[in-house]
Length: 397
Image: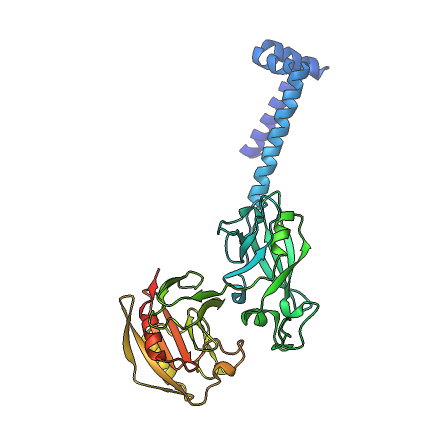
């Protein structure tokens, strides 16, 4: 027999002896009562539930403890974790506006702003954020080729779902894009996002929304990108651009009627169809060959003025003139005169070319990035001087 076996036998004998000497408990409740009487603190705990009020307090305490435990378990499992919004399509970047009729204390009449990328989906006529209306959670495609907007909002408004209806899909479209007084006939070759990219307004059709005030605002469309008419000699903020900036419109051409509008993320337009266009570009995908975007892509515009110069010169479809230095906001950029030899230009669909080739291209450092300004004229007098002065006036915020 080993020492371990001997220890086991001795332990078993000792336990049997202890069990034989211990008293047999015939009534466990009476035994517990006797112990409580010998210990006053335990007796008070034992007697407290005998009182109705005390019993009620005891059950409330137990319920609260269980509730707290459940909440802790749910929090640990992520049940209360706020889901971040999904990335919004670049075609819906920036503000859209609509005129809303007065409909109660929370909905005064005026022009409202809708921004899918902001912490508040809606802003009131005075620019105040309407936090009660919530924020955009996602824009998702539907099986029929449409788009739906999911809104997340706190109580009492709660969540909502809306479908996008582009104005060209309204029940009574016009006979054609050039017809007056109607809606533009949609191009069947373009998707909903491509049409939004081209600036087509849209309405929001409720799928589910129990918040009457939010419903009143969102269904008051059409929602369109705001267009700002520019006045000669005035200064303007382009805060909707991905690289916020301030610029001044040259004051020597008071007769010019020009406008400013953001068309998509990283693209700001200044000009008119009668005079010319100045397009500011930032953080956009471009073709490896700027004239042949179908032959490979670059994730972004080249990062320095010299790299932009080399990129444009690499295309056989362009003739790039002698680069000229230009100072913008205390930094040295380049002005590049460009002539198109064999380049799609504006005739290419927007989904195949994001970078419009103008006759004057400016590569402007911002401090930690670079923007490109592409400008071309439809016959504007003193076009070169006008665009040079406008670009020199840029100040980054």
